[in-house]
Every structure is written in C-alpha cells, then in structure tokens.
Amino acid sequence: MTNIIAIVGRPNVGKSTLFNRLCGGRDAIVDPTSGVTRDRHYGHGDWNGKMYSVIDTGGYVDQSGDVFEAEIKKQVRLAIDESDVILFMVDAKEGLTAMDEDLAKILRRAKKRVILVVNKVDSYKMINDVHEFHRLGLGEFFAIASTSGSGTGDLMDEVVGVFPEVEASPESENDMVPQLDDLPKIAIVGRPNAGKSSLVNMLLGIDRNIVTPIPGTTRDSIHTHYQYFGLDFNLIDTAGIRKKAKVTENIEFYSVMRAIRSIESSDVCILMVDAERGFESQDLNIFSLIEKNHKGVVILVNKWDLVEKVTNTHKQFEQDILDQIKPFTDVPIIFTSVVTKQRIFKAVETAIQVYKNKSKKISTSALNEFILPIIEAMPPPVVKGKYVRIKFAMQLPTAFPSFAFFCNHPQYLNESYKRFIENKLREKFDFNGVPMEIYFRQK
Image (cartoon, rainbow, N blue to C red; front, side, top):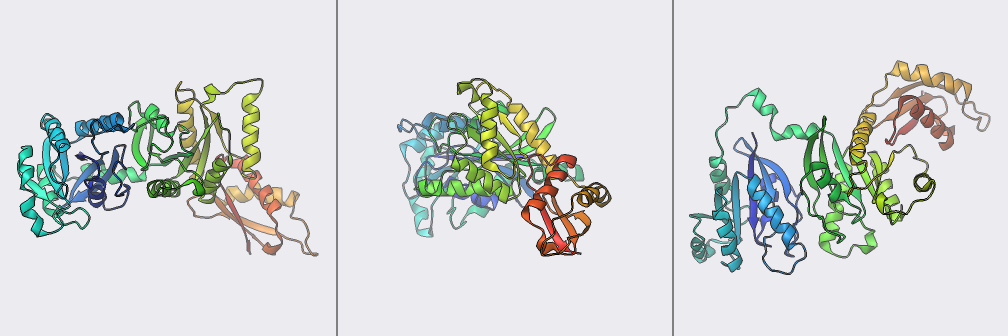
C-alpha cells in the first residue's frame, strides 16, 4: 500500500523545496520566480520506516491572466483527489492572503486530512507573527523552514501518524515503491513542442501533464508508472531540449539539464521529431547525446497527419534521417500522429523490444562459432606488412552491448573493419535500436 501526500498552495510558497526535502533529492526545479512548477510531479520517500509518495503541484492562482492557470488548477484538483494527506503550504513572510483563504475553502470541502504548513519561519522571533493563519480554520499548524529543514521532522511525525498501520511482511515489502526502480526506464525526449506530453497523456488515457501549443510548457522531468496491455515500465516525460545559445532563462536551463539527466538515467529514449519541421540539427544533437550515453533509441516522427504526402514521402523522410545519423543507422523509425492515435502503441512496443535488445547476452561459444569463420573469410587488411589475426571474442559485462576481440596487433585495425564486424553482429543477433561498442585487445 502506498501512502500519498499532496503539497498544495499558491505560487512561490516553497512547495518544491519541501518536495525535494521529503524525497531526499533535487528532482523538482526550485527558483524564486513564481509559477515554476506546472505539472503534478511525483516522488517517493520514507520516514521512520513508513514509505510514502509525494505529489508536488503548481501554484494555485485565480484570475491571474496566466495562460496555464486553468490547467494548473486542474492538476492541483487531481492531486487532491489522489492524496491521503494534504500539506497546505502558506508563506509566513507574506502573511495571510485572500488566495490562501480561497484555497482553504476548497480544501475543507475535500474531505481529506489537511495539515496546515507555515513555511519560511526562519527564526523563533517569527513564531508570534504567524498566528493569523488560525483564521483559515484548519486547526493547529506546523511552522517550518523547508530550505534548512527546521520543523520538518515534527511535521513528518504528524503526517506518518495519519497513515494506517500495516503489518510488515516480505510480500508487502516487495510491493513497495523501490521495486519500480527495477523496471525499464523509457524517456521521451526531443525539441520543445514536438508532442512529448501529448504522447504521455494519450498512453495513460488521462491528462497527466499539461499540454499547450506554447514551447517549453513542461519543465520538470515527470516520471509515471505505465502498466497496460502486458507492458510494465517507467515512462519519463522531459522538457524540450533547445540549442544552448537559445536557452536564456535559469528555469529553462534547469529544465534542459533535467532532460539530459533523464537521458543519462534511462534505458531507452523515444526521440520525438516534428514532421512539419523535419529532422533538424538539434534533433541530430539529441540523437548523438543518446548514442554517446549508449541508450536504446526509437525515432518517432510525430504530426505525420499534417504533412502533405506524395508517392514515397515517408521513405524519403526516413532516408533523410538515416543519412544524417550515419554511421549508426540500425534504428527503428515510426511515423505517428498522437492526436489521431496513429501507431502510438507500436512506438511503446518497439521501445520495449529495443530494451530487450539492449539487455541481450550472447554466449562466448555462440559468438565465436558465428564470427570467427566470417573473420577468416574476410580478414583485416595488411598494414605495414603486419597480418592481424583475431583468435577469440567475448561479450563484455556492460549495461549495453560491447564486445572484445583479442588479436596480435590491435593497433592496426581501423574503424571500417570495426564497422564491418558490428554490421555482421547486428545482422545475426538483432541489436536494432541499440548503440554498440567493439574493442580490439592484445591477446
């Protein structure tokens, strides 16, 4: 059983800072600018042996003129509905506001346990200045400073006291959250406004993430557990990655860094490309980043329904992509439209297959039985009168496919022969969508 805590409040009261503290990391972006968080952001933690999930929400505003206001309100309401305990955060330095009172009225109707948290109480001198929050009618409050952690221990003692007691058993421990870390991690990456959040929402069948036509809507990397149609994995929606020269705001810089970190921590990346704009240099940069980190990759060409088509349009588009990503061209390319649900489940199934390809292990006997006759029939070229003889090969124990070939003169083997061996291995063992490394070593 998972206990769920939702953190709600108006913008810039310190929700994401508390979220990071409760989760023991820095998953949520924290910035003095109000309105940084927009989507529901999930994390996990434990206190005194009790596991819980935490939901960080966007700042609740009313009639602010913000284009994201309606969607943020929707995400906050969904978080309230999902939660078991609600932490209602207010700002001690700004004092009680009309917006706090409006949100308190909504929370009183939620029929959930609401704990009032007065944040930014940085010194004991401020204790006497925060009693005005009793007017919210939510009972006793907890005065904390989420930046330093002051008061958060007493707060969490109260929170976990609300959770029901569960008998600890091996079976129940296996059902807890950390087991999710063992599932495949599939990150959806790409430039801004390529349709990443729309794909997540369509796969889940709910409005999990905010979607607008405005580039840069998603800021945090949003993790979601996907378990449908026999598939089970962690899905990561990321912020759009723009060229470094175009990133001007600190918030966007942190968003891009989290997207890059999501690539580094994932198993497979679905690279979404806007069909109307084509495969541009920034798409190639993101692809190169995925390849450099030895992650599986599926290229998803989205908005295909908006492209005017003639004979072999998709073949020409596909060939253009392959020409740009050379020499690593053993990559699945899927043309889709998230709006019309065209081939979106095929994209997920392909990503899972790529994950299996990435995890594939070839026995040493099967590898040598296949590759040594090919090498004997097509030996490496003679360099400076030296004959290179490859005697033995084995797969290395790495997280991605890598192979060591033992020979007498490894320094004389060039890149083209390495590519020749790689292509033969791909033909035989199916490493579609997975970068591969081949090393030549002294026998």
